[in-house]
Image 1 (cartoon, rainbow, N blue to C red):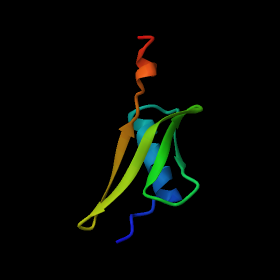
Image 2 (cartoon, rainbow, N blue to C red; image 1 turned 90 degrees about the vertical axis):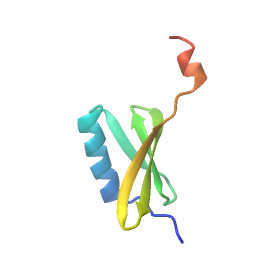
Image 3 (cartoon, rainbow, N blue to C red; image 1 turned 120 degrees about the vertical axis):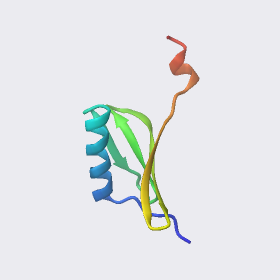
Image 4 (cartoon, rainbow, N blue to C red; image 1 turned 180 degrees about the horizontal axis):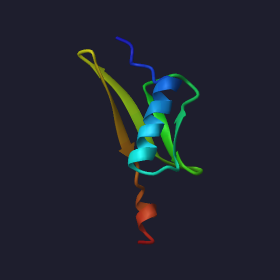
Length: 75
């Protein structure tokens, strides 16, 4: 079975949702190759990925934030 492809319409909807719930500066950017993930940016910094999951006819999106240990060093 093929992985679900994240398309431009979905990216726009997820972006609007994340901007309203988390931060109006967040941007969803599709990857160059079509796949089930898109990247989440604030400015030039990639914060993580959002992946599309389809199970039993239900579609959901999971946002995974990536925190590097070097990002925590200055705290």
